[in-house]
Length: 351
Image (cartoon, rainbow, N blue to C red):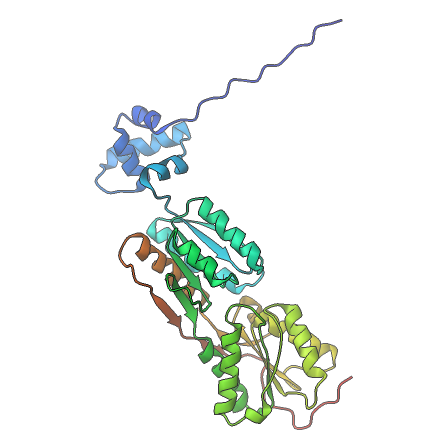
């Protein structure tokens, strides 16, 4: 039987270490560390030598080993409630840009708007030894947030919480809802309905803002709220519920832009035009609202600013600049587009 040639695997090359970099650059290990951390006090000649040695050796710092020594990773964990909502893209942009300015890296994950999955996502970030946590519109119980605060600094974005240990950055949802209702009322609408965000973060405050605005405008007899969700399907089902009632509202304030788009779909299926028959207002002013075929009037909450402020809150805590909670509220504005107009002179019959 002929002998088979056995190909032996090449011996694996050991990973280069910081000592290898120091030897090649002919500098001390501590100076290499200074260059890696971006510290000042290194001559241009030595800095260039270290950077060249790092490139030639293909050296990658061992973040985990370094974190065990320094007790810091310079990595922040961010749990995003809903990656499908384009509003959070703005939040992430604000976080990422400010993190880079301050010398931090960011790990993102999500719990898909499911509390127990969000709790697991938070635990996974803590297991990776992040220096701080940013929770964007979480749906977890406040006890979960309190527990995370015992490990690292935590900031909660776009949600009111009773957790006394965390910082928070929220949009003024009461003011935003008032802007939406007042805009419709100024156009002449009196039958203004609200499709709420269900159990989503901030939904209850927006609903309360709608109720207060309607009462302040003397429209309490026209108050109509239906349960929805921060999803297209939630807005669609909420609008279907409104279509089954009489009289039909002439304006709808939806909990967010995605909810508003779902409502507009249901109105179209019923043979109603936006805004000729029913005006629609969203919330968040996402990129979807700007699309010409949608052109949605929407409450602008500044996601990038919310993300940036959240990152700064975490940075202050990590750097020991502050130990007491900080709570920031970002004021909204209203962006008017083609989805709102005066109420119809004569209501249109449904299909």
